[in-house]
Image 1 (spheres, helix red, strand yellow):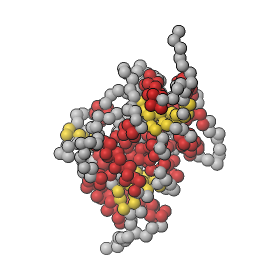
Image 2 (cartoon, rainbow over the protein chains, first blue to last red; image 1 turned 90 degrees about the vertical axis):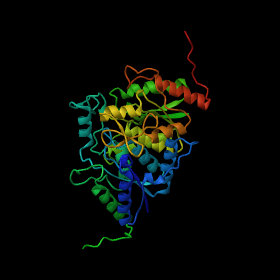
Image 3 (cartoon, chains in turn yellow, purple; image 1 turned 30 degrees about the horizontal axis):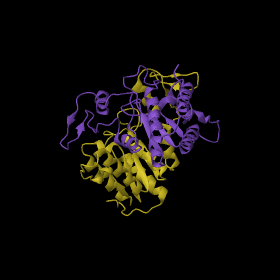
Image 4 (cartoon, chains in turn orange, cyan; image 1 turned 180 degrees about the vertical axis):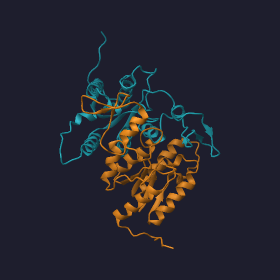
Length: 196
Length: 196
């Protein structure tokens, strides 16, 4: 089973090393992790680099059986938009979409903190932030399109039990996510960790 | 030709009125605008409201010929993630994806402003913000997955010529976007505005 490892991890300065760690964890569960940097896109003066990366990422999702997304909020209240595009693309192409986030703060609370001030209830029954726009209040991790796509795949979004020291590199929730995928797919691990 | 009108517009307090304005503009170009609030989802105690909205939105995209997305940055450096999910879903299901943004500031500059401090060049040739993560620097409006999906549909992202007074309600760029879609599809308008 091949898992496309979506996330803002690609923006880490040590993205290659980190991607390797994720792939190794996947292998312990018998999965093949596909990490976007693997593409090793050769420079081609005839093709925009951004277009080449776009097409390589989509080809990698096409080759995968599922998407495992890192939804840790990135430069704003929500998940990285590149990751979210890939979730939408994967969901539409009938891939299962699994996800985790290393930030445990509720979505509504994240909106309140980012926008500032106190929310108020509108006459339409919705909750409004001080930017004048409604805040989704469904007790979900992020925008409902993301959260419901993940739920439709059979697993809820996974969080770590406590706030990680380094939310960009902690792999506790990712590991738990892989464990649940394995439980769901009932696939036997290729390698079993032995105690001692 | 049916256009799914994606955007954080649904979070406006006057979303219904605003959606009606967008639909009327679509009609002037001979298009049928599908605005998510149209769903009028009936409360069903057996179905989560967030799930019902999710499914209704996807059914509306399925019924459309193209997506027209409002990419105006929303509560962070990038476009609204619900909108971005829908772009990914629409692109994967072979819909054309058109888009506009009412914020003309370059993506890299928006990252710099949101994160703070000055960017630096990394040893890997990438640009890094002070949050320690790389910033895409492709002279695109937003994350490359969004920008390249729009480019692949044949039109670049549309901006207004000057900064709108009300970026959440200004329809100049949306109107220009519709004009380009019409030019591309060579569809005759159903209603022609007459001067005077």
